[in-house]
Length: 262
Image (cartoon, rainbow, N blue to C red; front, side, top):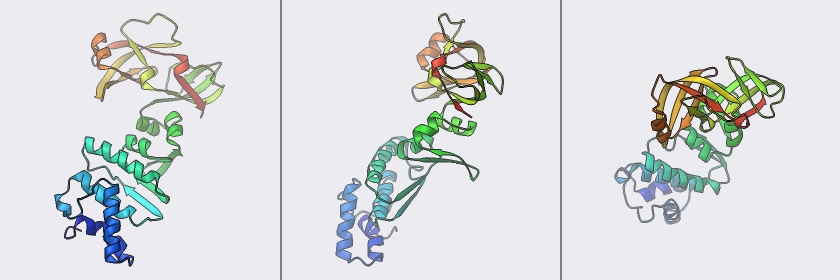
């Protein structure tokens, strides 16, 4: 409410429930202190930064101690540095919240950091649910795998060799025979200019289709059988002299292929 002070905004719901004005304003000040806005109660909402406004909104709803807390993209309007700080503070407050918490987000990092349980929805259909660890380690569709940033393959395993449905094969340690999913984390994919020596069980030729800098890593999308995404350091890209269209050798250790029933 733009015409009310920050303190009055936080107290509004409490007043609507019949709490005395002085008590409600005192409770509002207590919540403002908890969200890091002590001393800001007299300001108007228009004078707040994006991060401060989100904290006021959080204080206003938590002050009511609701049975259900719905957070719809709570960090969408925040800049990168503010988002990290607010996410940390929000997680701390939610840990002491005893009601049901439902967070809606399109940011997989935000979902992994905040959730006890994930529900992945695409076009109104639930694709997968489970703990963050279960969903990231055992995605059951390409959409979920792309969301959490891993390579997912499907095929049929026999004597530790998985014949992939889309072509190619992977050797995995301890793969049970039958229809399986196989997950390879991009950071476990090694790239070479010449065929590598040593004992990696999975070695094949690929071509660099795209190179995208993401944080301190470069995601390299490779065509080949099978196509795969690797994550390497910018230094590794420079050492390899790697660019789009270049031929490389791809290597993945059998122990880095995670396999589970399809």
